[in-house]
Image (cartoon, rainbow, N blue to C red; front, side):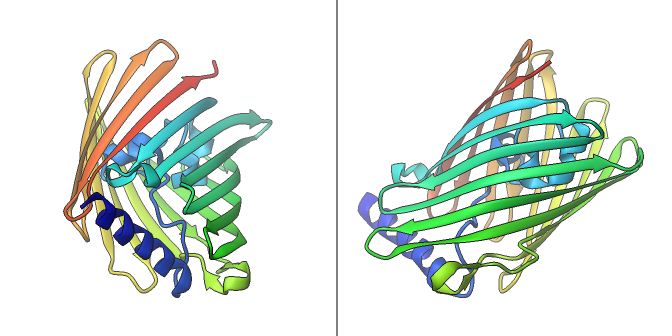
Length: 271
C-alpha cells in the first residue's frame, strides 16, 4: 500500500510537469496557514506570510522562521522552508528558500519579497522567485516566477486581500510547461478573542477552491486553530506555543484519499 501511494503521488507530480500546469502547486503558506485549512492571504503575523501574500510583509515585525512538512505521511514528500524579513526605510523586505521532494522528484525555490504601506488602509507587495524542478531520469528545468499582492483594511478589524500568482505565465524551460497561474482572494476578520479567515482560489483549468479557518488563544501562551479546504474536503487542526520571542507551531490535516500530513514550525521575533 505504501509503495502504491508513493507511485500515485509521483505520477501526479510528473503529470503536472508534463501537462498544461507545472509543479509548485503545494501549499507553502507555513504551518499556521496549514492549521487554517491553507487559508491566510489576508492574515499577517508569522514568518511565512509573505509566501501567502507579499503585501502582508508591511504589517508585521521582523521574524525568522524554519518550517518542515511531510505530506501524506511520505518521506518522499517532505517540505522544508526558511523565511525571514526585515525593514528597510519605508519598505519591508523578505527572503526565503523552499525545497520540496526527495531524490526522485525535487522542487527548489529562492524567493525575494518587498512590500510597502501607502496608508492605514492600503498596502502592496511583490515577490520574485527562481524555481527549479528536478526529476530523476527525466532531467531538470527552471523558471522565474512573480507574485503580486494587495491588502485593504476598510476598518481595523477587517482585512481584504488579493494575490495574483505567476501573472507573467512563466514556463519551465525546455519542457514548455507553464507554472500554475492563480488568483487568491481572502478575508480576515479579527475579533477580541480570535480571528476568522476565508480564501477563494481560482486556478486555471481547476475547480474553484474554498479554504477557511479560525484561531483563538486558549491560554496566554497557547493558540489553537481549526480549518478545512474543499475540493476535496481536507480538515485541519493546529496550535502555537509562545515562549517570549519564540513560537512553536504544529498543524495536521487529512486528505480523504492520500492520508494525513503534518507540519512543524519554529520562529523567532527579531526584536
